[in-house]
Length: 292
Image (cartoon, rainbow, N blue to C red; front, side, top):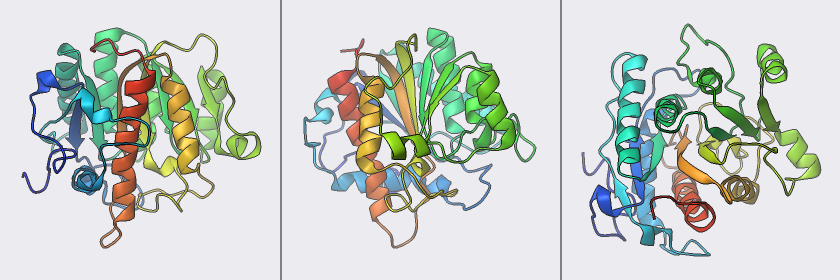
């Protein structure tokens, strides 16, 4: 198990307790509802192993100085409702310690458990989603827990959603975005006009959860994902979105999901690990951190 799920940045950092760390890295190797390419169940392990190649300096600061603890992987066998419940429980334990959970997926469904924990702990919050797909379907292929339904479940919980980088929607999803308070900055708009200085709308909740589906990135940056879409955002556009999302806000936690490793192709795994660490940097530098 240790070889499969090493600690995040294990080569660089000494082992510490959950109480000593701001960031709780939680592997969730879930793969039950993938609808095109497979492999997301191997994503968390690949990210953790690739993290051994990271430098502690992220180009601006050393996010690891706030402490990084890696939890055992969440058990992902069994009914999806049970898996979501287990994820919720693990995230709630991090919240109880005043820490910031960082989920490594696994398919995007892992986010549902985290958002249920947010609802229980904080009430309604803002969800900032980087993704190629809207994920607003009510059900998909027979289940409301599909990775294509994650943001619909967030809306059902009463959370406020902002989507960035979207470039694939079904017609019912288009209608849902018009009839519900779903805010968005689609990839086409980013390509034409860039990212506005005030990215989030007035009145967007101060407390947020950030969910990053790696297929939000262009396939030239992230080819290892199960449902790729052309025309994605660049690496530094992704950085800009994250930085503007967390600046001056209370970040409950974040996730990076939908990496589907390709045998012999190492750079996407490292890219995902770097994205996790860079996001820790943006949070630790820019967000309001209640636990520090």
